[in-house]
Length: 247
Length: 247
DNA sequence: CGCGACTTTGACAGATGTCAAGGCTTGTGG
DNA sequence: CCACAAGCCTTGACATCTGTCAAAGTCGCG
Image (tube, rainbow over all chains, first blue to last red; front, side, top):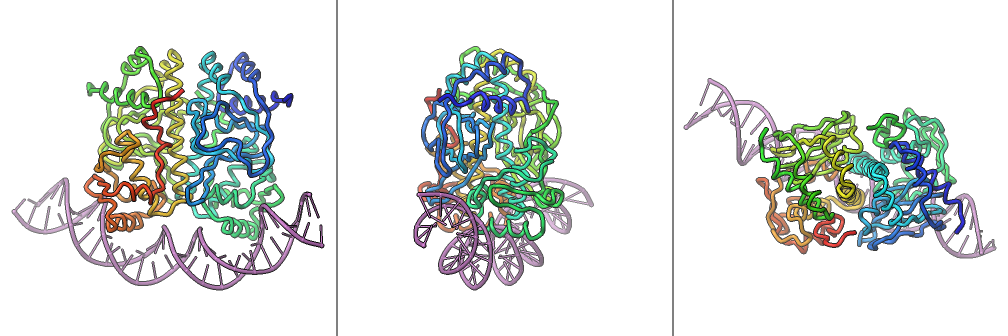
């Protein structure tokens, strides 16, 4: 495919530069990565569970989820990935998957061969470090989700997820825009938060009726940031965004 | 201190070798790492939240937890670390902590300067890769906890944690020994599983009365592995133990 | 127009939290 | 050696959050 892979790679590099410092030649090498663009429909897997992959998936457009399925049919989403995220960068060092990657909306994915990424890490130790750091930030987000699922009430979990996604889309700890793209069905929200879609609906209604948010049609509008953050107990530092000084 | 740091480093290297291949000189360099041994009492923090650390903590003896505290006082443990684990290896690339590390039992910790670890990663790309991989496996465990907290009932969560700790202590996917050291108070189990200590106690009783386990005095004995694994819905592959062939 | 996916709502059930009290061990100091 | 306190475990009664079941409404799309 001759899709503009460069644009996706540029988003990825920008993401890395949020948390790491890269030299010009390192950026150049990253932008020269090979890749194949693939379109995935909503609710379709593009990486299946229990297989060994040979490429990592960079999200170019849409929304992707890492999802685990229990034998009783219950599903749990353990990560959300927006454009610019390398959804399974960790597969470079642990290529066997115990989860699946699924599109939650019409999604374009760039498949980048592990071989090319490994070659980069061998030539540029600093890039290897940046990849490692990216995985650590990912883990930091999962850890925060663990806190949500373990110790927050449903209303607080919903509010927290809205705050997180707003910040990640804005790439800032100061959520300026009050409207952002949130193309998740309520059942997907439920699978992120360990709730039932019915209860997510109840919580949405409560947040709506108290004038905090309005959601629908793939968009979320946050009407009262201050109160939403208070309900969510939200502290964006775990996202490691816009932190200018890192070692 | 002149404590036998070498023994702790050897445990750490053994842990790395479970998942990565290391050359002799790389192992030698790892075993030559400098470090300072520190004893921590039960329920005391040895890394505090919201600080920038200059060293990573290798657990030599005892049991440590990564713990997050909400402003309403609720606490959630997001990782458990047994002897041989480098509890905060990720701090090498993201040195600012949003969590605390606490001893759940009398614990000995070896503090290893980030500078020494960074020096190693620069000299040996393969060691850098092994560290990265170790962090990815850590994240895999947190992801599985997310599944537990989101989609398993309390009884299943308790069973799952017992299975996990048994496997991690035995370092095998085939839990051979039915008795293992589990020096966690019920309140700590509760803080791992997102439950109240009262409910953990109820679940312990239920597992005890159906003849699956017996716990107490710092030990756990598993009487019926087969049924426990069934209740837990346990699949040890996420631990990445005893996996001989990795890229 | 009709189908399918998603949302919304109500009634009820069940799992887990909260509150309260008592028992058991362990360590400390008189 | 004994008394006492502190921490942890155990149990019961009750409250509440969230899940389950069922049904109807909305929207887009073929």
